[in-house]
Length: 455
Length: 112
View 1 (cartoon, rainbow over the protein chains, first blue to last red):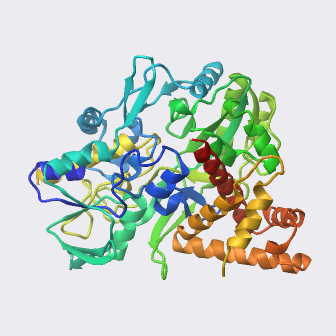
View 2 (cartoon, rainbow over the protein chains, first blue to last red; view 1 turned 120 degrees about the horizontal axis):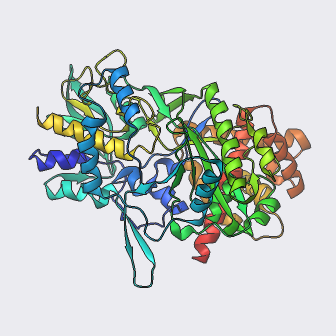
C-alpha cells in the first residue's frame, strides 16, 4: 500500500524484501511446502513465556498476504475511538478511517464465496443459532469465478496480485532476497540501510525510509539501528483449537478456509472454524498414533474449530545476542486462560447443539467429550502448564500516538526520535483490534501514506 | 552431533502404529530440515534437548535412546511427555504435532 501510493505520487521508491519473489501458486495453499517457502523459519517461530505461544510471519514478496486466510473484517468503531482517546491519536476514528477502508475494499477486492459456505461453517452457524448467538460470514480478500459446471475457483488478492504490481507500474523497484540488518543514522536522521542481498553486502542510501516488516521484524530492525524505545507492548490474540466429529461429512477442503465466525462475543472473543485437511486435523487430535489414525479414517466427519481472545498480556521484541534473531517474549495474562477456557466451553456447547457426536479436548491425554453436559467442565480448565497456544495476529510493538513516552511513532506513523523514518504496518495498532486485522492495517497504512504525501 | 538417529527414534516412537504405513525416512529428513530452519535460539534449544534425550535413555535403561527397542522408545517418550519440566514436554509435543503434520503432508503430496 505504502509503496504503491508513494510511487504513484512520483517518489523514487525501492521496495526491499528479505524473502523470495514467488508465484502465487508456487505451492498448494496450506501445504507443508507453502510453510517452508513463504513463512519465516518454515512457520516455526514462538514467543517465549509460560506457556510459549507459537506464531507465524510471512517471508516472501507480498508477506503474509500470500498465504493467509485473507479474511476481511471492518474494524469495530468503539475500538477505534478507544485507541484515539487512550493513545491520543490525532484525526483518528471510525469516520476518519471509513474512506480508507472503502478504498481498500475497492482497490483490492473483498468478496464472499458464491454458492454458499462449507459444511463445517454451516455447522458452526447452526450451533450459534441454537445457542441464540449472532454469527456472520466473513468476506475475504479473494476474487471468485464460477465455471459453467458450477465449480467455484478462487483467486487470492494478495499484495503480489494487487498493490505491488501497481507500485512497480508506477516505477517502484523491487529488491528481493535482501535482508536489511540495520539503518545507519546521523543523529536523528536515517541515511542508509545496510544488509545482505543474496550473499553480497548491500548499502542503500535514501532521503527517507518506511519500515513495514511486521510486528516482530520492524521493532527488531529499529532497535538494531539504535531506536530503543520500540519493541515493548507487543499484543497478540492467543488461540486454542479443538476437533469436533459429526455424524455426517462436514470437511470439504476444496471450500478453502471456512468463513463463519461467531460475532456474539467480539471483540473480546472470536470463535470460528479452521482449514481442516487431514494433516491439519492430525496436529490437533490427542491420543496414541493408533487413535489418531483411527480417527482420521473418518476425516470427512471431522473439522478443526478455534477460540481466540484479545490477549490482555504483553510482550517484548528484542534482538537475541549471538544468534541475531528476534527474541520475542510474551506473558499470557491469567484472565486469558480463563477466557479461552470459557470460549472452549461455549464452542463445545454450540458444536453439540449443531449435531457433533464427539469433541476432542485440547488437553493432553484427555478423552473426547461425548455430550453437551461435559462442556461446563471445560471452564477454567486451561493453565500455563496444559495450554497449547498459537497466534496469527501480532501488533502494537511500535504503537502510534501523540505521547512519545508510551508510543513508538506519532499519530501518523512517524517514528519518535527520528526525522525521516516512518513505520506503516501492524506494529502501529495500539492494541489488538479484536477482529481479523488485515483491512484495518491496510486502511491505516493508506491514511498515513497520504498524510506523508500531503506533507 | 548428528541428531538424525534420535529424530528417527522419536518419529518411530510417536507415529508408527504397526497398522498404517508412515513415511519415516522422508519425515525424518523434513523434520531435521525444519529444525535447521528454526530461529537460532530455538534451533539451539531443540538440538540440546534432543541430545539430552538421547543420553537420558542411557541413564534410564543402559542404552542411548537411538539404540533402544520401539517399546522402550515409547516408554522414554512417555516419561518426557509427562515430565515436570516444561521444555521436556514441549519437545515431545513438538515432535508429535509437527511430525504428524509433516508425515501426513508427505503422504498427501504423494497421493496428489
